[in-house]
Image 1 (cartoon, rainbow, N blue to C red):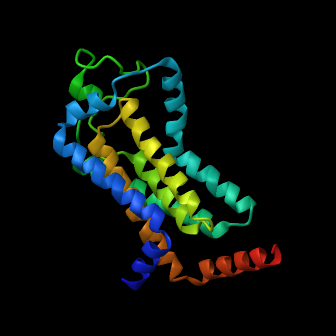
Image 2: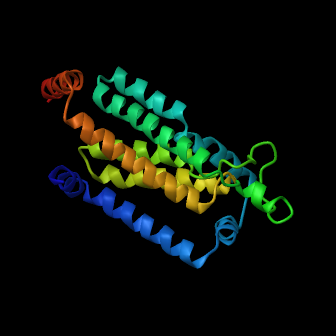
Length: 221
């Protein structure tokens, strides 16, 4: 419990922003139904925005997390790299378990083209794997780990906003409802905290990595 309090205290900006985001989303969900909220959040589409979000949504893809991991290995930041990968795997596992346990229709399956005009042909998925949003879980997990390790905590807000934008991209592209994004955000942050706390207790392997990284940082001062 003391460890969690310390994490929240050191990373106040990130977690205050995150909890404000959760409160805003939950409040919105009380006002709007699932389908009405989806349409309300998607009032306008443009070809440029379509292309942007189709590319940007990949920030929540596993390949992006792996790319960040490899980049961190190159810069001899293996510890944070491994925490990102393990967080992605954990959040992805939880998301897949929930998708199978609670199959829910995607927006296009529930609404159909006759009730919503902005589904992207050849891109927007159908089916019953809407809940939760795996991309959002991955993005929030990545943002949380990066924020926890950030020396300049001002970057935390940037990471949070970028993760939120991934969540919105899933709605814009017609892949998920807001409820799915909310669940993904909770899964991602919870997974990151679990990984960060468990690894911080240090198996010998991770302890050696942390000591090596600290030496590199001292030598670079």
